[in-house]
Image (cartoon, rainbow, N blue to C red; front, side, top):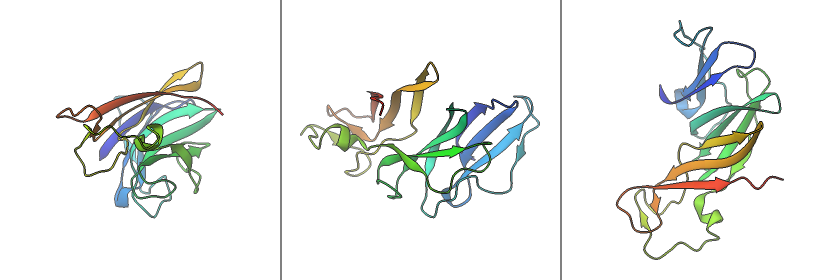
Length: 162
C-alpha cells in the first residue's frame, strides 16, 4: 500500500485510498478509525496508464480523488479529478484536476532552477485546502527547486474558480 489518503466518509465510516495494482487507486474501508479494515479486491479507478498520490475529499456531495497524471492521461505532469457517488466506483473518465508547474510559470522557468527528477515540472502528492466546502488552495511539492535549492520545491496555488 503506497500513498495513503484517509477520508471520513459522509455516510459514516472511513475510507483509506492508496495506489494499488497496476497504479490504479484502491480502497480499504472500516466503520471505526481503529478498524478492522477491509481492503476491497478491485481498483476504484479505471485507468490504463499509472496514477498515484491520491488525495480524497468531498465536493458537491460527491467523493473526489485528486491524483497525479504522470503519463499523460489528460496532461502529463498535471492532475486528474475522479468523482464518485459512493467512494467505491469512480467515473471511468477523470476530469482535468490541475496543470503542471510549468503552466503556472507560463513556461518561464528561472535559469537557477534545479530539477531533481529530470526536467519534469510535475507536482506530487497534491493536497487541497477547502473553505466553506469549496477548494481554496492546492498545496503540492515538486522535484523542481525554482531558486536552486538542494531539495525539492513546495508550492501553494490559490484556486481561481470557474
